[in-house]
Structure formats: structure tokens, C-alpha cells
Image (cartoon, rainbow, N blue to C red; front, side):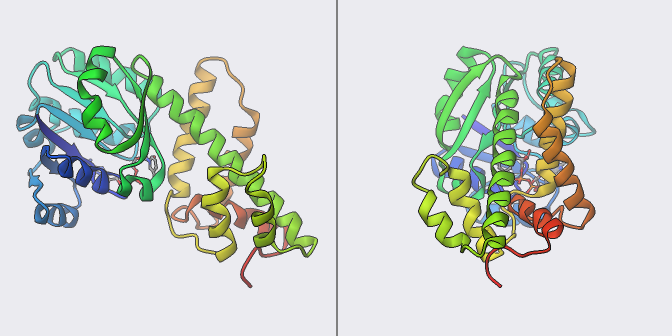
Length: 295
Ligand code: NAD
């Protein structure tokens, strides 16, 4: 099975390396030439554009920021869909609006190309370890055929429904993560104001009901004041915008999501769009005139 890979950023690069390590032949493209050069050194073949990737693979994996990028790569000038043969499959692992996943699937189906929407959770460390969680939407037989390929990048791979269901699940994930980080930030502000050490609070409560994967990953970053991404605030704004757009289009109301969206927006205006989302604590610090963690 020849695998194409387009989008070799924070997540895509290590994921691509894991596919290669599992023994698949990989041809890749990214508009960032430097990353292509790096991957060539470990045995990935390079292509000049998405179309050339499509012409030389049976299954194409995309890991791009948002739906406009996915559409450009698939349907733009020299797009991959012009190179892919009928019967081939696109596994889009980008986090995008589920309505767009369905639109993309429809356009691909006109060429007898099939889509799995397969966004991921876990961040860069898990992408490197090959332990990300993948939530997949799409046809069951196609899912089963490509399960081993997806598993070569992942700790868990679960089919959650038809096309679009993967990205709906990802939106649910992103709502839970953002609100957890905000809750942790609020709690740490309270502790700082009360002159109780957040590090000791973290150690005391991490094993109890409030403990979580989010807390274990983000509390040390807040305390050390290390806001290097990780997962950028700009990308989380994109996800919550997709969540709100989706919820409005299906008559759902998400009041807390709307509120955390405005906090992220304020951070972006304050020049923190490139910071890790653990920098949500910076918003609380500003309105409380206090700093959490290391002084
Ligand atoms: P990134 O910005 O680091 O990488 C995106 C890559 O796509 C870049 O290398 C860029 O050059 C390439 N690209 C963009 N447009 C292109 C085009 N038209 N042609 C070719 N290449 C193009 O982003 P990332 O952090 O790797 O995230 C990718 C996706 O995964 C996003 O949807 C994000 O929300 C999701 N995600 C990220 C994380 C994380 O922790 N970073 C975790 C889970 C999911």
C-alpha cells in the first residue's frame, strides 16, 4: 500500500514518520520545503505538489490546519483529487467543521474517491510516541481496511459513525479541553490570591476527582510559565468557531463554549495567538492583577 501524506507540521511530521516506521512506502508534500528535506533523509519520497502525491499513492492522509487548506490541497490548482485514481481513499486527520467534511466527501465521491474524517487528540508528544487517539467517521468496510494504517500512528482508533462524526467527536473533545483549562486557571488564581502554592494544590488534588489528563499536562506549564505550543490558541479558536457554527446550524446552544471563545479571542488580541492554550491562565492573571506559579 502506497501512502501519500500532505501537511507535515507539529502533528503531521511525527505522524508521517510513524507510518514510515511501520513499513509503508510514503510520498509526502508540504508547502514548507524545509520539512520535506528533513523527511527525505529518513526515507520519505517527496512530491512537487499535491497532484503528484495523488498520482503516486493508493491512500492519502491529510493533516492540515482547517477546511480551506484541505479543499485547496484536494481541489485547488494541482490538487490531489486530480491525481488520485477511482477507488482510492482520503483519510483527513485535520480538525475541521463536520459539515465541511460531508461536503468534501460528496465532491470526492463524484470521482469515486472515498473519505474518512479522522481527527486526532493527544498533541505533539503523543504524535511522536504514536499514541494519539483517533476518532473516525466513514464507511465501516473502508474503516476496517485502513485500520492498521491509522493504528500505526495511534494508541486508540475508534469509528464513531458516518462521515462527519469524527469531527463532531473532535469538537466535543475541544469543548471539554478548553473548559478544563479555564477551570484550572480560575482555581489557580484563587490559590494564588489565598497564598496557597498551586504546585502543592496540584500534587494534592491530581489523584482525586478533579484530576485529569488536561490537569497533568497543563498545570506544570502554568506553574513553570512555559507557554510554548503544544496546541496554539489560534487553533483552539478555530475549533471552537467550528463548534459554535455547527451548534447553531443544528439548533444547539453552548453557553460555556461561547464564553471561553471570548476569552481566547481576548488573548489573541493581546498577541497570544501563537501561545499554547495553557496561556488561558494569562487572561485570568490580567483581570486579577496577579501571576500564577514561578515568580
Ligand atoms: P501546523 O500549523 O503545525 O501544521 C500544518 C501544516 O500544513 C504546515 O506544515 C503547513 O505548511 C501545511 N500546509 C498548510 N496549508 C498547506 C497547503 N495549502 N499545502 C501544503 N501544505 C500546507 O498544525 P498542527 O498543529 O500540525 O495541526 C494540524 C491539525 O491537527 C489542525 O487541524 C489541528 O487543529 C489538529 N490538531 C493539532 C494538535 C496539536 O497539539 N498541535 C492536536 C490535535 C489536533
